[in-house]
Amino acid sequence: MQASIACSPHTDGVVKFRITSPIQNHTILARTKSPSQCSLGYNKFQSQPLSTTPTPKFPRIHSSNVGPLQCGISSNGYSADGSRRRSFREWVEVVGEALSTAFPLWVTVGCVLGLVKPSSFNWVTPKLSIVGLTIIMLGMGMTLTLDDLRGALAMPKEVISGFLLQYSVMPISGFLISKLLNLPSHYAAGLILVACCPGGTASNIVTYLARGNVALSVIMTAASTLSAVIMTPFLTAKLAGKYVAVDAAGLLNSTLQVVLFPVLAGAFLNQYFQPLVKIVSPLMPPLAVATVAILCGNAIAQSSSAILMSGGQVILASSLLHASGFFFGYVLARILGLDVSSSRTVSIEVGMQNSVLGVVLAAKHFGDPLTTVPCAVSSVCHSIFGSILAGFWRRTVPAEMKD
Image (cartoon, rainbow, N blue to C red; front, side, top):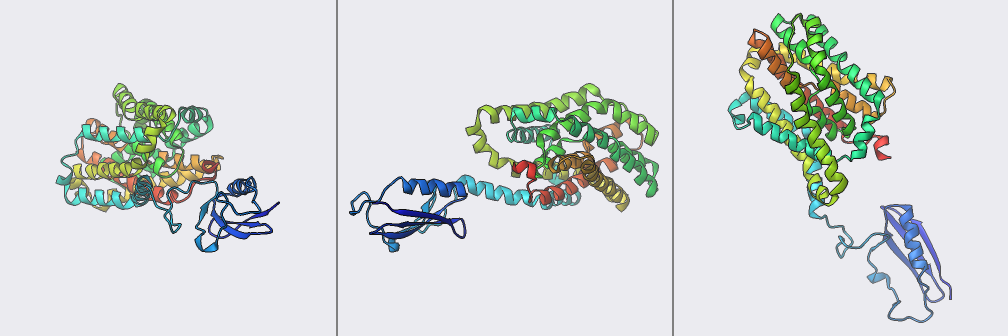
């Protein structure tokens, strides 16, 4: 005896199965997430013909004892009343997402604490900072595969566009802002110097949190850092009238240790050790947020007295510099025809400089210690602006990433 089966979508991800036979007429609700699962469930019911006589294998179903069925999904993880129970991993992901979305808040807290109570960051040593950044870059690498990195290398348009914007938008903005605000020579030199620096490792972390193209971000950071050996001294000499020598070997060594090697190691783990990556990956976004907040607070703590002495002039100049970088980086990238994900990446790479390098170069090559102040303030401004953008962009996934 044949039975007719109808499968139709219902509200809240529920699908109705109506099974009609000469002796039974039932409606069964089954939860599903896609039409394909509806077909799956339909075929499953259809492949089990109803007998004309009730048997233990096919007992008569009463509406009073029919609970929510899973269509194409295991019923594990659901309680008796049909409500879904979260696993420990899912709770970690939910909490991590909430902490990551509040990225601007944690960075602001770290900066205020560094300004008001610098001693709070006495425990942050240079070696500890490098270890923290290395772990974060390893975690970001775990979101990639070796194919992703090869794909980023095969994006010459994006890499070249980012490089040109990095060394045009920021240096020109630094020069014009210093003239517009009529900054004293020591502050102007420091602002132009940091504007001529390459992208920093924090840009990779912010790109990761902003759902940008992390592989492209890593390649762009490496490209701008390696070329900084020539570009930073040349642009600083032209725009600030000061020549600075860049330690090429030291800069290359730092980039390899903190950026390239950890990312490659993470991508390797993701390619060949996915069970391990699945355990660790939910912890990485909140860990990245905590690391950036601590590093920003530490940067402020190191120069808190000089920042308080300088008043609002340097803060305004640094804020305008990085706002210009983020804004024109994104707009010009879109004008050049880059997709949304790549444009976000370019915006972050252009807007976030290697301020630590700026502090080191200013202290080493400029006679006035106040030259380091714009570089220190810069690290805070770009982190706050970047975290705000990351919090905003994290809410939406670019169409190309969905595909």
